Amino acid sequence: MSYDRYVAICRPLQYPILMRGEICYLLSVAAWCWSSVQALTCSLYVLPLPYCKSNVIKHYMCDYPALVQLSCSDNSAFNKVTYFGDFLVFLIPISVILASYIAIFLQVLRAHTSGSGHKALGTCLSHLCVVGIFYGSAILMYMTPASSYTPEKSMVIIAFCTMVPAITNPFIYSLRNRDVLAALRKLRAKCAVL
Image 1 (cartoon, rainbow, N blue to C red):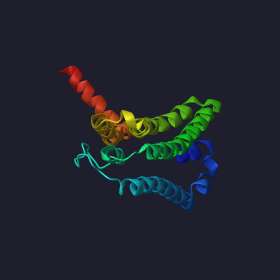
Image 2: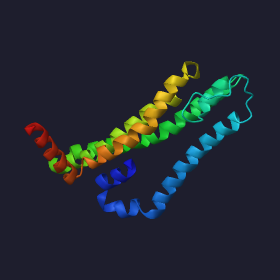
Image 3: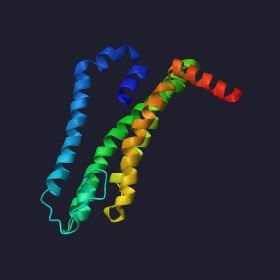
Image 4: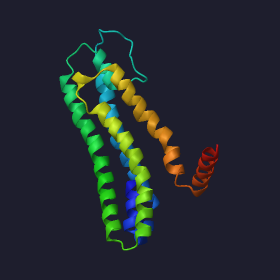
């Protein structure tokens, strides 16, 4: 989305070329492959681990940090490898997102019409809110040291990471709709009269 917005705002005349179907397809396939390699690496390591502790996972879902905690083997090498892999999985998308939005912000600063600049920043702000919530909680979950892992903290972060962006998406994106804003103004006016 950030690359799409970058092209739409900074290179609008080249949009049909830079965002043609093949490019979108390649971006999607690259994201899926990159994530799949990381998930497969973690799965292949976790499957043969010996488990001598409880077989009950105190979690909403079966995530690899919870399984590694149950293992009775030395997992320090795995923790280092997954930390590096998670760093790359987060670093590349966040770098692209930040580079896109910095370029958009600089383009808006160079533009002389404030109306179009506010509109461009308004379309980007909603996406940045959702991205910040998602990546912030995901980084808290996967980039903290394994020694500080607790099931309770993990469940709160996973709930935040999975539910909050899904719950806030309709609000964030629908508040840009004029009809929704008009209905909210009417509701606020009715509440003020009561």
